[in-house]
Image (cartoon, rainbow, N blue to C red; front, side, top):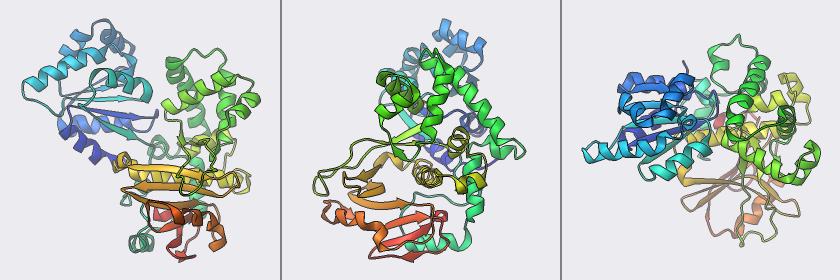
Length: 411
């Protein structure tokens, strides 16, 4: 089994909070880590994916909790929202008796429904962990820490760990769900076909009434071809043949299921007043995006017009994973920047009063002209750190004051 960086953060949260909530897309490995918690910390475990268990929880929540006393893991708890109010009482009772930490671990693949129940019943007593698919560092058993443009650390890392471009494309098309690496013989196309079917029948159907599943699949397919690009609701509505409200609803469903994430635009008046204010959309897993966009092999990806956007999606996902897996995303903000006259920065990282600018590319050779948009940030009120272009190069080199070209292995 691949060791997950985030597991140590989950254990820390359990030891410091009454309730730990683990969210993440279907198949990211939540249940596997629950098995480790059960073994390492002595928690009980029950899954509401089982219809009989789910019915018991819904019909008599108080009795259900009495039969599953803390410390307990309740997997897929959003399937029985009736439990939330009763959990509040159970947690209160434990706290009054002096046991304030490590009571319950709750998991679910629908972040919105899960957090809605938590917010309404147990706000302030909960530690939240957002779980992502595997990172490439985890797959290759390499130490993982938040991506920071520290040249000494990056040089040291890349001297012992370097991903060849051909291998990188294989990983991108394969995707990063654990089952694909637990079973190397599992066909990629078959896995994602089953994944989409299960996602539609279970997760989507729990959130909305879906009258036309094929139209929703078409919507996902078109959106996959737009990963790494601005999200323009009007264009999507016209292309899929649905109205704007439906587009907004379906986007919300995909965000809630951790299938996609939206990167908001950066705005600072001292930098520019004429900025694009639409978000960019990224699929949380490149394998799923490739499957939906019919990019079914590394060779197809190399020759596809989508190559740049899919590689960009891979890089930004890996950077975000490096923060989330170390639970450092809570005090770091991520944006993109684009002006109406097309000055653009793919990723703006803001942390502790500092700002870093990062371009995400699928090539190898770049020069100072490729980072002209960075000059707009000379007037920023934040402290500027070193900046970078992260790409498929194998050499680390400087292209200007405090800006470096870095390989993807640096993440």
